[in-house]
Image (cartoon, rainbow over all chains, first blue to last red; front, side):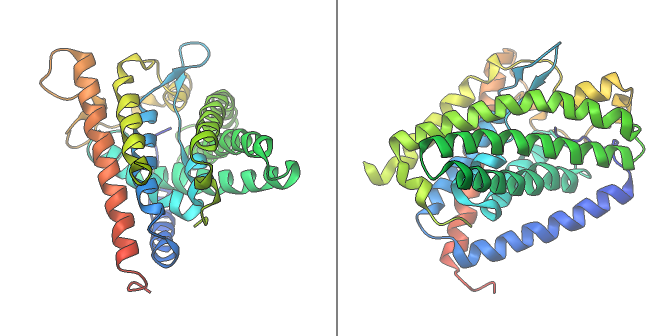
Length: 212
Length: 96
């Protein structure tokens, strides 16, 4: 879902850039206060994993593919503000080094896949854990729902940005983006659930860290 | 070995990066929508290219070039996020 340059108009790019800069600044401030030594290697491993996993496009229907975003996974393990930091690292590196996602659209990409996906994923996970209880089932179902919802919401926000920019009318681009990403979200949910179940089996204590 | 669990984690990430040539080359959700709805041509090329499209330049074998790009990116991301987090912990409360 990396938006290239040219899809968005100046107003949309400027607005999302300002909001994202504020969000990342706030994430730095909060992480500076709350981040502990235990979380440092996990930040590195999660950023590395999300980058590597984002390269693995999986096919969905009709000659279309999708890949993990990873914001929900990061938010579940470390909290939404830490997830914003991790996603920003990944998206900035992808933009500057790998030419994936436009330079001018970086703010929008951080907003969609960093901020929107992290926070929606985090609160959906909390909600499902509350409903199903703090057990294995609650965590895995919560992880799936959070991951699916984070992709779906990020796609809807992306569609709104495209429509506001005049790339395509909202009644055309919104259902198309929502439709494809409802399917891609299933992949995101399965990968997130698999990683959570792996973490539960090997390092369950990582799910007890303070969320940032 | 328990304190070095993240080394195993990083090894798993590098292994995942080695699978990258198996990835589907079909357009992703956004590209597909842009093609279907006729705004793909609005897209502009990046003003500079370093390891564009996850293919390391100058290597003939595309699978090798992709794996190399994946390994480099994975190590960079580990280093950057680890370093950032380490700085934030080290300089606790200095920013506030």
